[in-house]
Image (cartoon, rainbow over all chains, first blue to last red; front, side, top):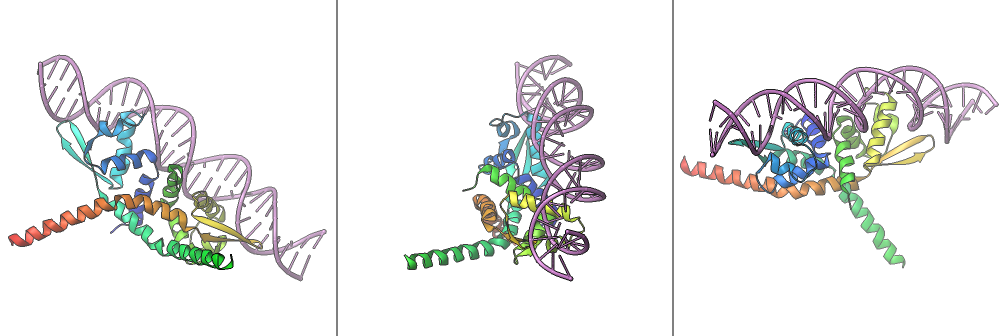
Length: 110
Length: 110
DNA sequence: TGCTCATTCAACCAATTAGTTGAACGCATA
DNA sequence: TATGCGTTCAACTAATTGGTTGAATGAGCA
């Protein structure tokens, strides 16, 4: 069960494009830190910090493999964020339904 | 269609508990700024800033009603965030499936 | 007009963030 | 053991954040 504190960290972690990019790559499988860093024009230290943010939000996990750090996706936290958003789904589906109604009336007039 | 820029703003807006609380209230209907501010022990100026962050992320809209500002939820942006998360749904459902398998094997052994 | 209420603006402050550089750590291997 | 590679740590910087206070705007009303 997620606390508000967790959601703060999760949404904050997701608010950075570098971190979202890292997540997307990690979602395709295990990767080392330097492999994850490679597409970004950042220092390894900067990427290491991003990974710490993702780890604090429990979005990734680490596995030590010799001198490498293998990073894996931890989807539970993403699920928490999704469940929070799910609450609002009723509002946008309502709004879309209203829009649909409006368009149908427009067609009647034309 | 959302850009990465939009997602930055949306997830950033969602990372603050005061702003999430405001969204939750706004989701139940139109409210004035001071009504939204009332449950929080913050100045009106602070709440006004939070509303600006939510508005910049396109999560809320304003309607002028005399000297009041009526705030409404704008669910489209939330939908963008949800759609981004939807991509990862396959990973947590996979993980849950794997967990289920594991539990079934455990039951076989006992 | 002048008063009051709702809201925002401007200036400021402390804490946090995202980035850098350079040193340090841990592990493999010659 | 020494060397090199992958990664993190420490210290620093510039920009951003979330909050405050007090003044300003703007609409409704006596």
